[in-house]
Image (tube, rainbow, N blue to C red; front, side, top):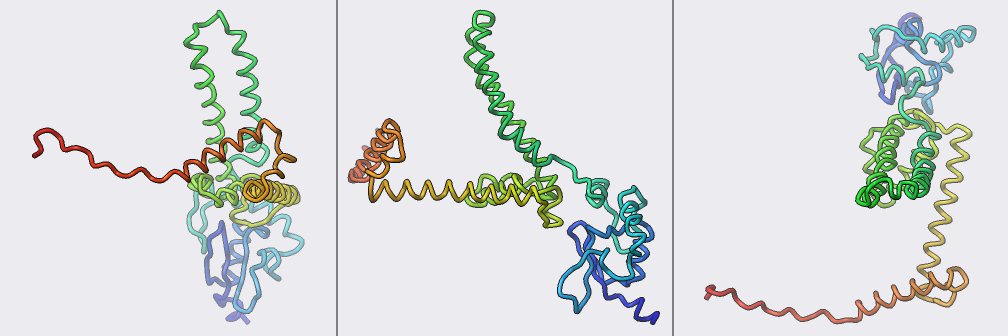
Length: 276
């Protein structure tokens, strides 16, 4: 019984990293130290269909002491001495569930609401400065002030990736076609630590459904405009105001004229003086 008990057959995930094989005694040792989280850390061995939370493994956590073990996992302790490597303070905070960075509410406010409020403030504030400051300042001030929400939005977005457990390099993915839709979905809807635990909370499910419905609606509207502009331009009159439709038709005519014009023949440039 002791030999089976000490068999190194278990694998464990911690902070998105996999360790093992370890024995059940190794796992119990980390439980006693408060280093194994019953909810966030997952365990598995050969023969199991899927990974399960460490708290669901029979005999590892006593049911009466599971709440105490959860609290112990949230307290600061010494570095791991068992199967876990040395981790940073930031990683320890993630283990406890205290994910750093910016959450969904702050991200949405500073990236969407604040720029609108800032722009309105500039629009209302500049007229009061007429005659009080030089015209040169009034000319360039709006352009300089517009960088404030931009810089703030970039900083908040980087911290949002940190909050999700993703590397900040994913910020570049927001400029890649199609990939940007998926990346923005995570920043818009997913809860803290989603990159590690892969779980949506109720608010996350609501925001995810809302986001993808809006995405499908916008995609369908763009596809419909492209279709009717090429097959039935008269149908656009029912959807688009007359002024906007006229501008759209003028733009389409310019594009068609450019496509219809034959390419100008290449003219050989005369030789430079003294080159012959």
